[in-house]
Length: 432
Image 1 (spheres, rainbow, N blue to C red):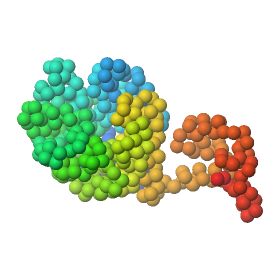
Image 2 (image 1 turned 45 degrees about the horizontal axis):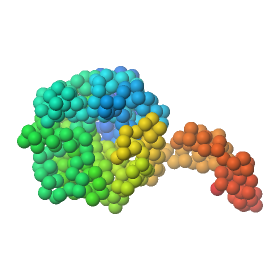
Image 3 (image 1 turned 135 degrees about the horizontal axis):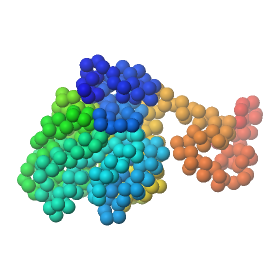
Image 4 (image 1 turned 120 degrees about the vertical axis):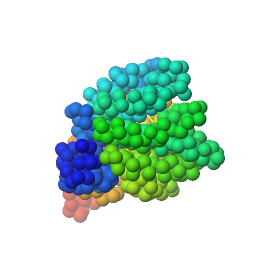
């Protein structure tokens, strides 16, 4: 039985109990969320030695980091180093988005390299295999695509991003509206190219029941990816994006009826003024399915700093109801991230996630901040560093400070006005 079918029958799985303990909630709370579809626990029945993670309403906002082989210079060891870095930085899941090289080997290595849930985007491998075999991804046969989906599920992948809601109707809508940046989704663009070249409907939409059969067999969580994801602010919430979201809402219903856990992957570029509306619309159309947002970045001008733009968008999106943030690194839109940029991306996304949990008043979220505030007031530098979201960076910066500030805060040192005030008021030492 799947997590969802068990929950609907009133049963509580070991995964639900594990998630409840981590979140400091009751197992019944988690079970009810899984049963309602507002919480998912990605966990393939073939997967061994992993730590289940809950995603969705009432739980802490989670973060995902993406890695994968790309181009002739891509190698497995480099990507495994990125996985280790992401895990050390606190990511809650990994997505292997390999598009070249030995994708099967990369996936199997990824499954053993981390205990976090692992996600993939099977169309990437189908595209790579078809291009290698026939010289063009446009020659892909539907059976080849489903063979890849089955293989990845059998290997133990916990969740799969699949563009099941990208229909020919939505593509025509985008053409009529004249998008500024037509397609930015790698998988979505290849899929739509195949649809147009072969004059056929999306096979993932046409054969959605087959997708669900595989997902149910291995208890793989389906992540409905948006092929019409806006790649610039000017295209946000256009007709094509909303039309695809309507279709995904219907696919969410069908997945739940089939006993398959499902979440929805969301937009990439959204202006601040539309973030809440976008999340609210998704939650309404997709019946509260957990929203897995890519960023989103809130400005198009932040090349080199898109992790900051995404942290802003991620915090507001999660506050509005999104439950899962896909990290964005400083290399976004420019190139592939190195290990250090992976670390920066994860930390930025975690800051956004925690800020949102504070804003939502999630039970226990403020304890961390309160503990660090008390350490700061007491000028307990080591405890401040230990409690920082990135202790290594905090300690490095602390060591570069002027000697004059050793006895006081980082700004004023021995000339601390706050300390003078504290002495006058008869309170403990404080810091700026």
